[in-house]
Length: 629
Image 1 (tube, rainbow, N blue to C red):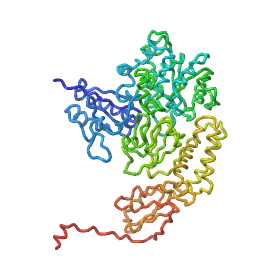
Image 2: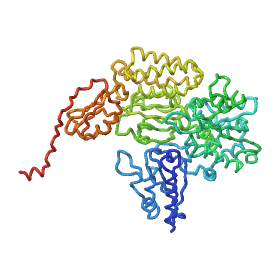
Image 3: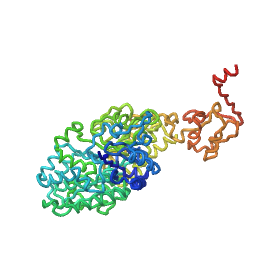
Image 4: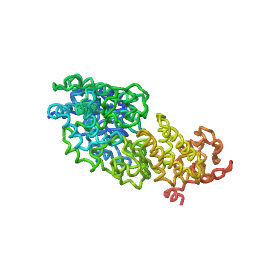
């Protein structure tokens, strides 16, 4: 009986590529050829697998054996042991932090449990640069169905009944937007795919482009048919070179197969797409700014109404949907609105992709049904907090979102629930924080980001974010004053009310949510001049405990500021005037000593130089004692 053919699915998303995935691909090809295995082993360079924290990674089919953290030097041994001799290599398999035994099969890894793959249905399974792989998994079947058996009104009705809402942040019903544009009399009409993904820690749209670009093309073409458009734009930030490359390859292939361009599938419908690259301005994620960018104008928002569906690019009716929204369309058309509407909650249908990052064991890209709780995401999919530290908060919705505290960990994830607690769905960034995170510092970080990225058109947003940042900076530097918290709240609400676009209206969310749930941390910074998480540099100090110091000279040698005085046999002392509070001394002090302490709010005890270290003698072993007796 012939041996089963092994298919190797190598992740070549940006994260794995950064870790050397293309070098691993070359090494695999060379080793497979060297051992004469091309007929028994095939290699497919897929898009993002999702489990980014284990990349570069490889899945061996048909058993779905999962290998992670691969290096080029691992490849000869892996090929020889597994693919030549049939002995899977356990040391290269995924091993959860709390366990000693590896988990061989992808289906048994907790990270992949509780996920529901609709948009990411092809991730890690196809070569994104080969249209044949997409066609083999029912690709373009939805487009064929639409063009041969559905009217544009039928398509819009199907999308409306499915309950699909925009995945770019606002959550506006997709079918309603399409219908408004369809009913406009002015022509031509346009469809724009928004892949200007600028949130810190977010990479959902990029990964879809890199792993399944044809799903976006198919969804956008269906949208064009529904509203009566003949042309569309794919707006993607230039920092995504691999995504742009694969999307362009997919566009060329779709043209070649007659799935884009003139007279698609002989139905008389014509539709074409072109890529427009953005230069990385965060404000271009706002749809009117994006339109201005494509038109060659300054990327600033304009007042609405009229909405882009009425007056958009070049003054024509325009539908703008983000990547995830459009990638949902083919599966809705194929499986039906009734099937799709059964997934999720009463008001939030379907699934949502999140980039799960921060203080979490299992970092990666996940797709989960709407209504799943934060607890399930953090502890079951995410694998909990590293070092068994306590979960403190999660920030959703990017820099415009809010911080959700530990007390709300059983909150269901849907549009309404997140809005009620002061956060938002956003495009899908999810940053997990542990007990060592300072929430005032987090708030300052996001306001710094949005302050830098503000287009400056609205006075209330431009000057208001400056004022927020100035107060938050003072607080983290130990110069907070009475009334600062009240000022932050009042100003935050004013910015929400007075800003023109959605970015300005949500800009104060990190401040308002942290004030709501972590007010005690603000009070500690202002009244006690103390940072409870011991993060803010001006409010901390490092000190060496003379009772624990063993005069090993490590901290003295590694201190970049040369602020530690130390000699052999003498207790080391930190000169507080020279210390830059970089934390190197704490990092290098051997755990068995733990002599370096981080202090905040309490006075630094004085330690005289010249104290001799009294090393404790190691206790004698029982057998030694018996010999002595």
